[in-house]
Length: 153
Image 1 (cartoon, rainbow, N blue to C red):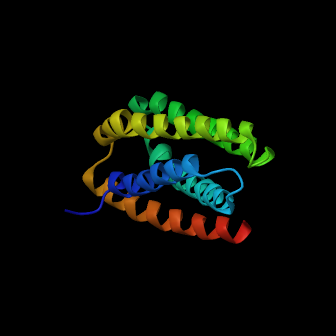
Image 2: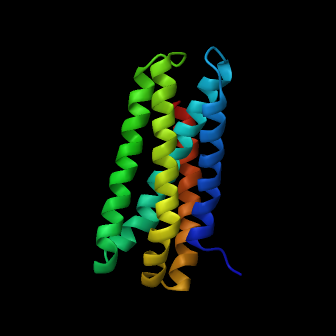
């Protein structure tokens, strides 16, 4: 079976789920907490940028995909806002871990909804050839964004 955009996205989704779990298990004062947060921040940003370019944009062009794409983009924005809030808080404080829980909930909600609903709608819009081409483009841009974000970190 050839690679498709959904397989490519699910790989990143699993990384996000794992990083969220590890982050929430981290303790105040543990230097690994900052590393995990930075890893999650970069993963979310690289994934969102590539996903918006190579899944949401083509789906936005179809009437059936307009509303689901806009909803998914709004959820990406909410996740970005959670990240911005966490960056301003003391990483060892109680407020930080509460906001980290909110971020994890937002991420898990978005991934669940995307895999259960958005993938089905977009799967009806895209051809198998498009799904394969988009996977290649997504993977390339995801890797490029990861590199760019890590360099800027």
